[in-house]
Length: 90
Image 1 (cartoon, one colour):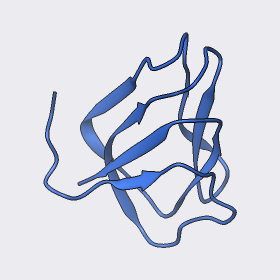
Image 2 (cartoon, one colour; image 1 turned 90 degrees about the horizontal axis):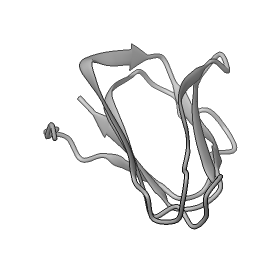
Image 3 (tube, rainbow, N blue to C red; image 1 turned 90 degrees about the vertical axis):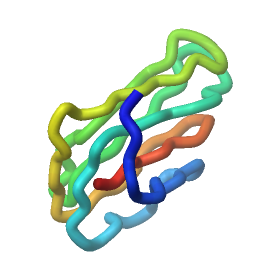
């Protein structure tokens, strides 16, 4: 697994507004979802989906690391039904 030098943003509750400021994302890790079918969705400031995952069962982590970091002008965790999402910044 890749390691990232910066402390990740840790999210357990959906954002109500877009987090302002440019962010370069290296990956996501969603831990401890409670049930199969739980979902998490991250959007950019224009509402386009950056990353989304649905778990197939309880406590099955979802991990995605990008080969090249991706830059966004803003972001929002629009949905997280359970668990903790780590957004790894570059």
